[in-house]
Amino acid sequence: QVQLVESGGGLVQAGGSLRLSCAASGRTSSSYAKGWFRQAPGKEREFVAAISWSGSSTYYADSVKGRFTISRNNAMNTVYLQMNSLKPEDTAVYYCAASSMGGSYFRLSSYDYWGQGTQVTVSS
Image 1: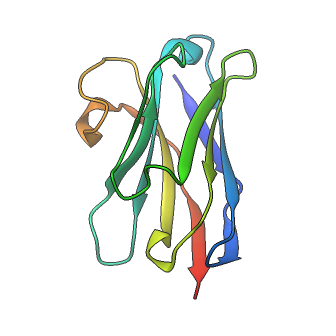
Image 2: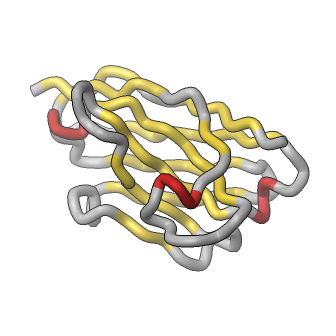
Image 3: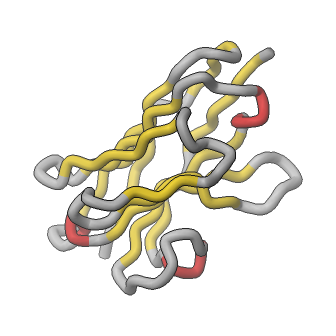
């Protein structure tokens, strides 16, 4: 069983930065692909970024490309999301996810473990 715990959310002004962290438990979780998704009020959960188990490949939604960076430290069993140049439309609950079964990095259904989420609020 894998447990994911996000941290680092908060309130920030537009143009500011935040770094989210996701700590994973479970000895095999460092070999899983990891992703970040977000869900704004009244909207569906959407893909933000993903990283392969080795960290050699990363993927981003067009809306965050060039502003967000995903990375991981397998020794610490942690994945990060550095968010720069934040916009009010980035306001959402951000979820960390892990995939033991492969599949598309972009699809929610490819991920079988989820964290509880952390709120990010960007004020204008």
